[in-house]
Amino acid sequence: MESFQIHKGVVAPIDRENVDTDAIIPKQFLKRITKTGFGPNLFDEWRYLDPGQPDSDPASRKPNPDFVLNQPRYRNASVLLARRNFGCGSSREHAPWAIQQYGFRALIAPSYADIFFNNCFKNGLLPIVLPESTVAKLFDEVYAFPGYELTIDLERQVVVKPQGEEIPFEVQAFRKYCLLNGLDDIGLTLRQSDKIKAFEARRLATKPWLAHTLQG
Image (cartoon, rainbow, N blue to C red):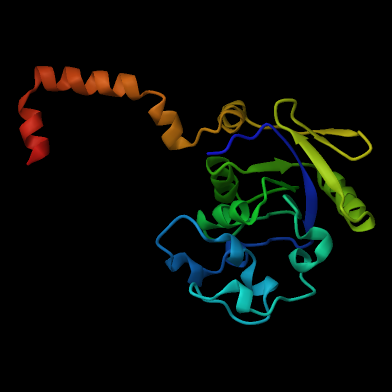
């Protein structure tokens, strides 16, 4: 998992409340058997005027010119600004996969659905919670200034606006540690590989029949 330390990027506004995971990545794309390739179908029903299927070529489809991510000023955005209860609906982990694979590194919203919030951290995304009034002001500034960028400093736990104003945010210490070091659940486990190997060796030394049982 890619570590997150300091990120500066253009902000894209998704100006809707209660954006659910089926809007983030529609159900037909869950048929894919790999963990990759979801970025082109992020917000699929909003981004395109024609219906999409897992085998559709994005280059041949009809983009919706009114959707925010299709507007030139937001096409290289890597910070997603949203309204309350973002990521509600089903618990599909494909939602943060699609957001990350599109190119976003962080999200800012007043609140998130619990499972989606947890899945973001497990996949290297930083979901930042800020007061609703602060988020509303950020929406105003994003709309007012094309190319509006924010800098997110995870170590210091601040969002830095273009003029230098800093907005503090909270993040649980263990989640912060994992993001700073690029550790997902597998990465955390592999850090204990020597202890795991030692345990397995001791177990087989005292119970050698287990080797035959496992092989069988």
